[in-house]
Figure 1 (cartoon, rainbow, N blue to C red):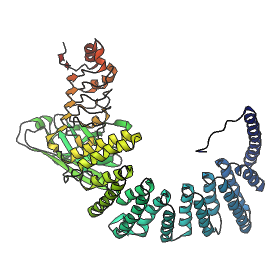
Figure 2: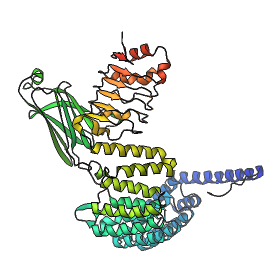
Figure 3: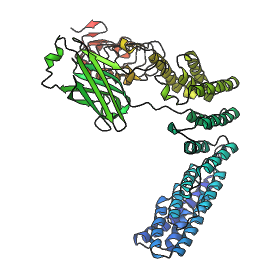
Figure 4: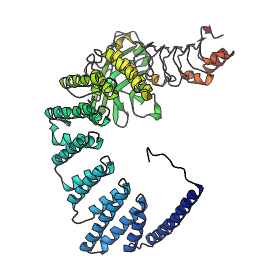
Length: 577
C-alpha cells in the first residue's frame, strides 16, 4: 500500500506463500476445468452457477466466467417459470452485491448486474439507485458506479432535476469530487438549455455556477476538479468549416487550399476547381500522405485543361483576366473562395478576412466578454492571495487570451515564465505553450500579403499554426530552440528559409517544399549526410549553408553533400565545380 514501509520476508515465509499459491492454482485449475467441461457439454444448470460463483467470489475479474453465467441465465429463462426465474435473478443480485463489496471496481460485475436487471420482468430500480448511493459513499470517485448510476437513472426515469440536486449535495460534501462536477456538466444543458445554443446553458444559471465554482477554488486553490469545471463553464467556440486560404499558380499548375478544420477530400468532403467558371479536373493530395489522411492543407495539380483553355493561352500576355474558384462541400458545410488574376499575373491568392485579435479567441471560450471580464477580475483577486498557484496562472492566461491577447501580451509572457519556475516538471510544456502564445500574437497582427515571416530570436521551441503560413515566401526562424523541421511541410510557397542557431538534427519535413531555393542551417546539430537526404527531394534547392554543424568536421563534407543533393549549386558559399 502507498505510504507503508515494505517489510522484508524471510525465506521460510516466501516458501510458505509459494506453497499457498500453488495450492490455490491447483484448486482454480480444477474448478475452471469442470466449468469449461460443463459449458462444452451445454450443461447450463444450477450446479454451473454454483461452480462459477465459488470462483468469482474469490476473483470477480474473470470476465469469461461472467459470460458463462450469462449463457446459463439465458438458457434458464427459456425453460423456467417467470416466478422461479425472478427469484434466481434476485439471488444473483445479492451475489453480485457481495462481489462488489470485495471488488467495487470490477468491470465484469457491474456489467453483469446490468445484464441481470435487463432480463428481469420487474426490476427494482429504486433499490439500484440506493445501491449506487451506498457505493458512492464508499468511494465517490468510482467511475464504474457513476456509469452504472447513469444507466439506472435512464431506465428508471429519475427526473434529471433530482440528479442535478444529487451532484450539488456531493459537491458540497467534497469540492474535490471531480465525478460530480463532470456529471453536473452533462445535466445542466438538459435542465437549463440555452435557446440560442443547443449545447449551452442559460446565462443566469451560468452566473450561479461561476459563483459556486469560485467558492470551491477559493477554498482549495490546489484542487484541479473545480478548475476543470470552471474551464467547461467558459466553453469553447466552434469555428465554422470554411476555406481559410486559396492560392493558385499557373506556372506550377496547382491550387492550394487550407480549411478551418481537417477534412478528407473525396470522402467526407468534395472540392471542385473552376477556371473561368468552367469546372476542371485535377487530383487532390495533402503533404502528410497516408500518415494523416485528414488535413487542413490540400493541393490540386496536374489539371486536365479543357480545349477552351490551352496552356499557351494561360501563359500568354493577353489582356484577359483569369479567375480560379474553389467550392468546398460536405454534409454540414458549403464554402467557396475565388482568386482573380489580372492579365500577365502568374499567381494569386485570397485569405479569409478576420477582425484583428479574434483569430484564435473562438478556440478559448464561447462566453460573453462581460462574463470573461468578470471572471478575470475574480481570478486576479485569487492570484493576489495565491501568486504561486499554477491553476490560477493558467486560468488568467486563458481568460486574457480569450479577451485580448495583444493587450495582455506582456502579462501572458510573464505568467508563462512564472509557471516554468512554479511547476518545473512541466517546464517543456510551458515552453511550447509560450511559443504558441508568441506565434498567435504575431499572427494576429500579421499582413499575409507581405509573404515574409520574421520569427527569429524569440526562444521558440516549436512552430504552431503553420497552416496559416502557407503563402510565406521568406521565413526567418533563426536564433530559436527548434529541434525539428517537421511542421514546415505546410509552407508550400516557401523559397528562402533561415534556420540558423537552432537545435535541429534532421531535415525531415522539408522534402515536400517544391519551391525552396535557399536554405540556411548554420549552427545546428546535423551530424551526417543521412540527416540531409530529404533535401534531395526539393527540386528547386540550389543554395545550402550548413556551417557550424557536426557534419562539417568531416574533411570530405562538400563532396558528400554535393553527391547527396545532386541539384545543389552552392554549399557554404562554395560553388559546385
